[in-house]
Length: 393
Image 1 (cartoon, one colour):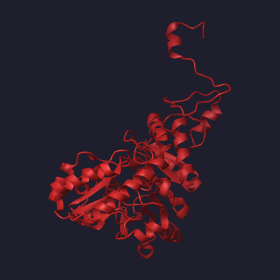
Image 2: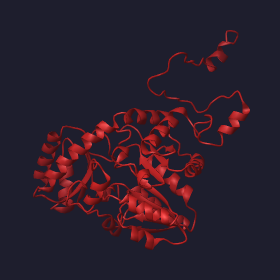
Image 3: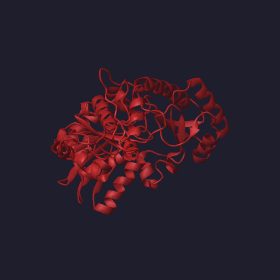
Image 4: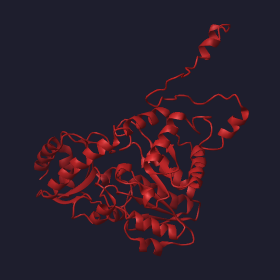
C-alpha cells in the first residue's frame, strides 16, 4: 500500500493476520459486510446460514459463535440469534404460521408472547386455544386440521408453572405439530427441552444467558436442520439480527452461567421458604415449594427450580405497592436474570396488556409481586424484604 495516497490509505486499513496464535476470547467483528475473492463463494453465502460470512444481517462471526454456543448447550443442530427475545419469538411464529392457522398455547405465557398471539388473531386470522401446561389430553382435544404449533414455557412468567414437557411435546409430535418452548426462566443449566421432545427452544438472552443487565438479545435453537433453515431465511428478511457487540457481551456472560444459576436458585429457595411462612403473605409461587401445583412435575424434570418467584400479600394491591416502594436493596425494575435482585408488579408492567380474564387465567392477582432474585448475600436480601413487609402490613 506504500504507493497509495493518504486519502486512500485512510480508507483501506491493514487487517491483522494471526500466525501461530489465536485470541483467547471471541473477537467482536464490528463490520457490516465481508470482502470476497471468489464470486461463487459470495453467492453461496447469501443463501444459507452456515455459509461464508457475507453481510451483517445474514451472518457475522461473533453472532455465529453465540449461535453455536447456545445450540451446543441446548443440544440443537443450529440456532438463529435475534436482537431481543421477542425478535426470536416473532421470527419463529411468523415463519411457521400463515393466515387461518391454529396455535395451541399454555395458559400462562409471557406478556409479550400473549400480545403477539393476540395480534396474530386480530391481523391474520390465526386462532389460539389455551390449555393447561401439564395436560397432554387437552392438547389432543384441541388439535384441528389447521393446528401447526404448540407453544410452551419451561417455567412460566410470573407464577412459575412448569410445563410437563415430555408429555406435552409427545402429544404435539403425535399430531404433527411443531413444539416451541421458551426456556428463558430455566436456562440450559436447569432444562434442555430438546431432550424432552421439543422442536424449537427460544430464549431471551437478555436474561440468564448474558446475566448482567447490559444487553438485549434473543435466540432460537432447532432440533432439525429443516426448521433451522426455514426460520433463518425468514429472520434475515425480517431484520431481527443482533449487533455483534451484544452477541459478544452475551458470550462473555455465558461463561459464568452455571455458577450464577446455582446462586440464583439458592437465594430463591431461602427467600421463598421464609416468605411462605410470613403472616403478611398469602401465597408464594415457586415450583420448589411442595405447595406449588407444579412441584411434582418440576421435581421430575429440573435439578433446581429457578431464580424467579412471585408472592401475594394479604393486603392485596395496596400492600404490594407499599412493599415495592419500601424495598431498599431490591430494585423496582423490569427484566430478570441479572446479578441484581429486581421486583415488579406484573398486572401493571410485564402483563399490562392482558385483560382481567387473561390475568386470572395466568394466575396473576392484582397484588402479585414478582421477584427476580440476584446473587447478593441472601441474608441482606431477607433483611430488606423483612423491613419492607413490616411497612406494607
